[in-house]
Image 1 (cartoon, rainbow, N blue to C red):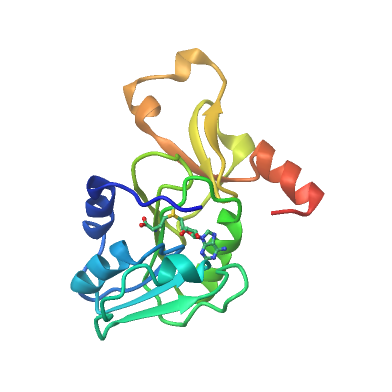
Image 2: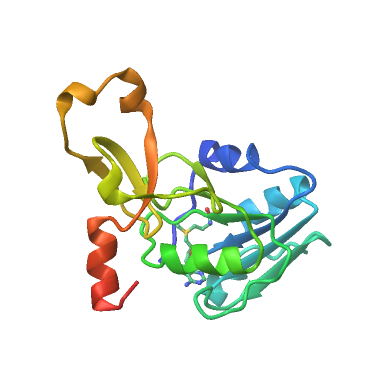
Length: 182
Ligand SMILES: C[S@@+](CC[C@H](N)C(=O)[O-])C[C@H]1O[C@@H](n2cnc3c(N)ncnc32)[C@H](O)[C@@H]1O
């Protein structure tokens, strides 16, 4: 099964890339976004698991686009990636991809996998607060979970409501680590 996203989602990704980038798209479908990324970036790697989908578009690839058929969970990520792209609203391996990107030297991930709507750019090296240190407000965790920490309503103001805390150790994170399936 696969489903492409819409033009505004792709544009939101392209707006976050520039000509110096070496980008890696995880789960590239028929390469429709990867081809657009190749018009912007210095180099693009695109990994897609399903060979039948990868070969849907018979046009030759641009010289700076390298498509790889395989499972992104198992394939080594090339060194020197500056931006990861993950458009996958039902991703179960978010944390694994973050770790693999960081190991490859990548510092940002452009994705819709955490909030499952819109596109965000995550700074992979940004410091993370412990989940328990958030008094109240929105959080996004490195395991891929998002949510709202309940707390003293008196601490909520427009600025606090608009802030998303990057955290580690959220309840889901602790649960899946305990079960060893992250
Ligand atoms: C929602 S589609 C998005 C395709 C493409 N990014 C786009 O926007 O046009 C997700 C794609 O990720 C692929 N995929 C899912 N898990 C994968 C994995 N572990 N390794 C490689 N590809 C994967 C699926 O086969 C599917 O084609």
